[in-house]
Length: 331
Image (tube, rainbow, N blue to C red; front, side, top):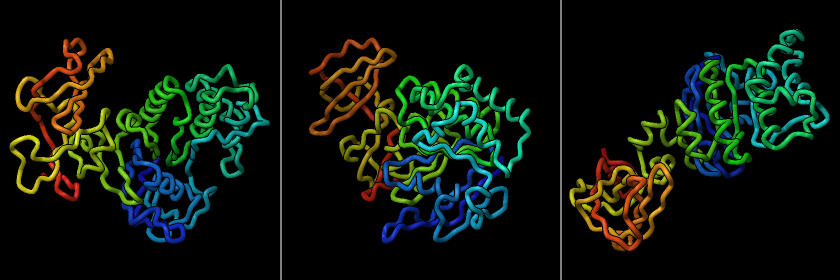
């Protein structure tokens, strides 16, 4: 594995700027998640590292060496796409073996057999090795697709929303498996998603993208607790951060236009009166949907609360975040 450095990378398609002067270091052995909505530039950045697209300016270096002039085949990277991209006429075993049989790798058959067996066991598809790819379920096909990348030993794994088409339970299972594989192997991952749960649970670092620009780069906890802007704050956290006028509560600092309150950063029992609109009991916690005047607020409380809809509760900010008129955080 190796450190990957992107220096002032830009890419346009016609008049549309897809990536705008992005500089980012992916540390050796890190699990970096690129987070942002559709159109933020996540997949384009991934394709630039893989060589499937060529940057207009800037440089990409892996282990200190520029890869800008290398073809995708010459770059020591492995990529997993959102769609399965398997060879349908091959068995699972043949699909997993295929990358290792590249003339560039010249992997001995004994090593191929060992790697395929190990990865198939980790991904729980060992019993499917002799099945045709077309005989698999969607979840099994995606496991094979991921396994085809994992059998290699590249300098970086590139993954483009590999779990987005799976059902919720399988997605949760594979999140755990992928993170365990990365932690055990010390592999370097660059992973694209719009799913903030994946970012929070898997990433060592998160890169928040907006319209092709890197807005913030740091640990999930850092971005959650100290976002640089309202945009960055809304990328992480479920339920989303409450953003309200700064003067809705007393004590706002000079220049504050908005106050941001995470649902768990609202104290109950003192402060402003809020109307309870709906109570959602989720088992381990209860979400309260409130309003102060015309402004909706979501907060969390004890799972066994006796509060009902149409009640009144007093709330007070705890650890609020303040933002200026441009949406940038006031420190």
